[in-house]
Image (tube, rainbow, N blue to C red):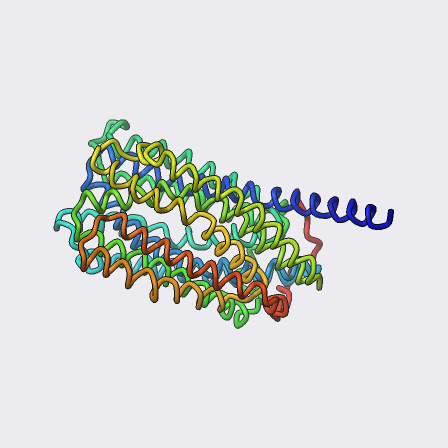
Length: 470
C-alpha cells in the first residue's frame, strides 16, 4: 500500500514537472519558429529572385549572425544570474544583473556596426562567390548591422525576461516582429510599395527595420512596471551588477557561439567552391533544418531556467530531475522530426525554392540531417542545463572539440579536397553532433555541474522598491 502510494505521488510529481516544462518550452519553441521565419521569409523571397540572390543573403547572413550570436553570449550570462537570483528570492540582484548586461550589450552593438561597415567587403572576399554576389552580400551585412546597437540589448532583455519564467512575452514580441518583416520584405523586395524592386537590399532593409521595431517592444516591456523584473531606466546609469561574474559566465558562451558559427562559416566557404547551386542548396537546407532546432531550443530554455532557479533555491535533486524530464520529452519530439526529414525532405525544401537542381541537392542534405535530430536534442538540452547552472565553460570545450576537431576537418577533406557532393558537408555535421552528444551525456552523468557556484551579486540602488509581477 505504501509503495503504491509512493508511486502515485511520484507520478503526480513527474506529471506536474512535465506540465511546468511544457509551459516554459512551448512559447520558446514558437518564439524560435517566429524568429527563424525572418530568415526563412528572406530565403523564400530570394529564391524567387534567383540562386545568386539566395547565395548573397545566405552567405552574408551567416557571417553577420555569427558575430551577433557571439555577443549574444551575454544572454546566457544574464539568464544564469537572473534565474539563480529569482530562485533564491533575490529579485533586487536580478534587476542589477539585467541592467549591467543591457549596458554592455549596447556598446557591443556599436562595435558590431562599426566592424561591419569596415570589414564586410574583406570577409566576403574570402569566399569563392562571383564578385557581384560578394558585393551584394557585403551590402546586406552593412544594412543589417545598422540595427545592432538596439537589437543586441533587445536580445539581452528577452533573455532576462525568460529567466524569470516568462517565456510568453518574448514569443509575442517575436511574432509582431515577423508580421512587420513579412510585410516590408514583400513590398521592398518585389516593389509592391510603388518603389523599384530592391532585391537583396530590400530584404536587408525589411529585416533591420523589423528588428528595430521588435527591439522597441522588448525594451519597452522590460522597463514596464508590469514586467516581473521591474527594471528602471535610472538603473542603466546608476545601477550596480556583478560585472565580473557576468563576464565570467558570458564570455565562454560567446566564444562557444562564435566557435560554432565560425565552423559553419568555414563549411559554407568550402561549399562555395562547388558553385552557386550547391551553395544555395546548402543554405536552403539550413533554413529547412532550422525548424528542427526549435523543440531542442525550447526544451533547452526550460532546462536552463529550471536548473538555475532550482539550484538557486538549493534543490539539486529537483534540478537534475527537471533536466532529465526535458531530455526525455525533447528526444521524443526531435526524433519524430528526424523521421519526417528522412521520409519527405523535399516537402520542406520546396518552401524555399522551386529550382529542380537545388531541390534535389537540398533534399539529400536534409535526409542526412534527419539522423542528427536525437543527437541534437541530447546536446542542446544537456548543455542548456549546464549553462543554466552557471557552468558555461564545459559546453564551450565540447562545442570547440566537435566543431574544430570533427566538423571542419571532415568538411574540408570531403568537400574542398575530394570535391564530393554537397551533402557530404552534412555527413561531417552528423559526426560533429554525434561526438558532442556522447561527451555531453557523460558530463551530465557525473553530476558535478550541480555543484557550480554562482555569485549573484549586489542589488541595484533603486531595486528595493516592491517588484510587480505579471
